[in-house]
Image (cartoon, rainbow, N blue to C red; front, side, top):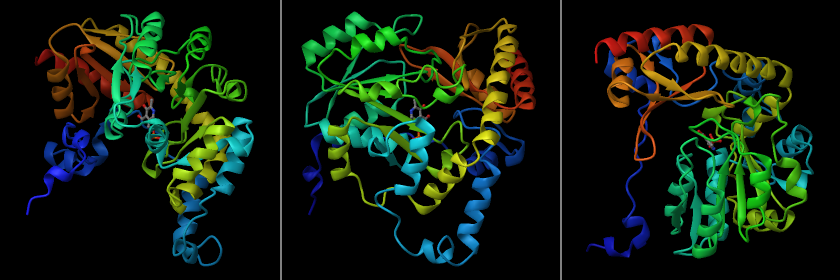
Length: 377
Ligand SMILES: Cc1ncc(COP(=O)(O)O)c(C=O)c1O
């Protein structure tokens, strides 16, 4: 008996998510050894996790006792007390305002679960990170798109109109924005906080902003009842694979989020890795500084190429308009040389590539690959 009609109709109507290929599968397909691939397509950290994190994870797997093998056999702390306490000093916020998730991605979903009934509106400002609209769809919401201006700044009056007309419950902002790399100016955030909705400020890349941390609105959470800020360990701490994100929330909201959070959403590995990273800040901040420095060099090298128009970035990636040929062909030609970048071909980003900032050697490899790829197109 078919029961497919019992599925929630808003899910049945969604487009399937296209997962990226695992690196080993891609390496086999390209016929290039995995260690020769130059992976600059997902804004990961080329320097990886800190030594203390690596050691803490090794200890977790190999020793007995309170932090050893036995602890893998028992559930984690649903209150995330140790990690939230460590984060409290990192972000200078009371522990009561912090909640962690399996990546910032989980928290985007959790926030939407809290607010959305079927049909409720969420404002998205493309081009931006795809999970806001993805999770809005999963939660039965309606995405109201307010495209950015040509320079990727927000269209503030249009957001205000959209909020009034749609009675949106949530507005997602991203600073620095992915994939455009630009910051949202504080006066614009202040103006948007006057709207009668929740503003979620996604600061996934804030650690790469120069000078470090100054542009963050985390300190504002205690002043605005309708502001939540999301952060992640995926980028600056080199822990994308461990899935650790966190949010700073107003008191009234975090009380509700605790009710709907899966009790054991953070694995012991994730919690252990993140705590060790916060204990190794000096090491990680050196790598962040290297990435920020390399960003300038990459931008300068990209600017010399006649077929690309790169945009300045406050993040760990650089968006480029492809001014000759098309972005997809360029991406595929580079991929055949083992250099992976992301391409966009959407109405708002037609013929763009995004290149993550890697090591100096990776910058050289990506420039060489670009120069060779364009010749073949
Ligand atoms: C703007 C933005 N927010 C959130 C995320 C996801 O972070 P996490 O890996 O913690 O789920 C990303 C990842 O690319 C991102 O670009």
